Length: 356
Image (cartoon, rainbow, N blue to C red; front, side):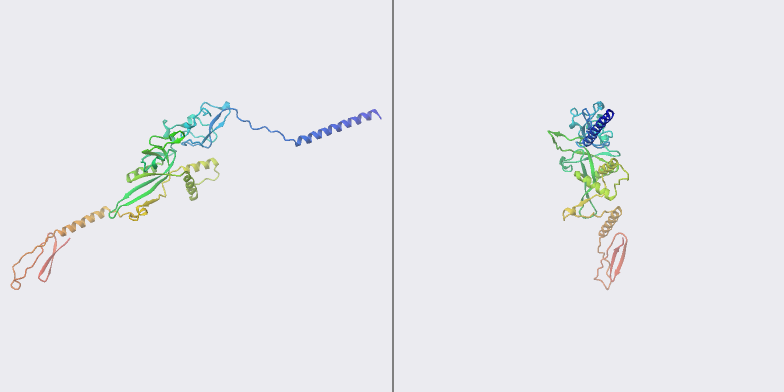
């Protein structure tokens, strides 16, 4: 065989073997799964971040904040670090500046109970703080704490011109947030248990108009608190959305919708008041409002009493007159009145009739 042909044949065999190995490598490589790089965990301490958007006035609770890993180079001195911060002291504090979801909570963004400006920071925009005196009977026996929501009931006695008075109780305000009891703005916890104490005053968060109504109501009767369930706020919200009192604008982001719904759930309500009268409790009590006597009617009643008193003051007496020949034995009795009179003669008798 020619040497040249032999070299070409050997080269073709080598090329074929190389092509076979290359194809095998490609097929094996395509079937093998490719390793992907996993997410890089931040190397640093855990800092306190907001679990949801926290507007101004939000009271910090256990479900509103949490610790999260944070890069070491981005940690600031104002952050709350896990293991260093005392969560028992942070619960009950109030947000002074708005905090977005996932943003670290700084020490300057929170104000603690007892600090200057705490109550003003706890108030929502446009809201006012008013204080209502209560007792163990009207204050749910002390089972009302800052952050709870209550209804306000007014008990009064309505008197009228006649008949027994009307005893009535009506719910004048609903879904009112409690800011403080006496001078305390936080719950006292001993060995993990909340201490129930009696208090004499309750500070509430209301609108300016509702504040005026509360002060007027205190002069009318007695105010009492009724503790609301946590689930009532959601049912009230669903009712408000169904009635059209709360509307969500088209194209609103989930954060904007959440803010609108949160504001609607925290809004105190002063409409659609319910009431109960004594007639609803006992059959021996009245259930209707007694009639009221106006000043004009009162003067008319006084004038009528004076007229009757004047009529009763007439004193009729017998006046003897000389007998005539035909009626020597007859005696005529004549009434001598005082005031304006009209004398009426019937036969031989004359009667004086008083004229008003």
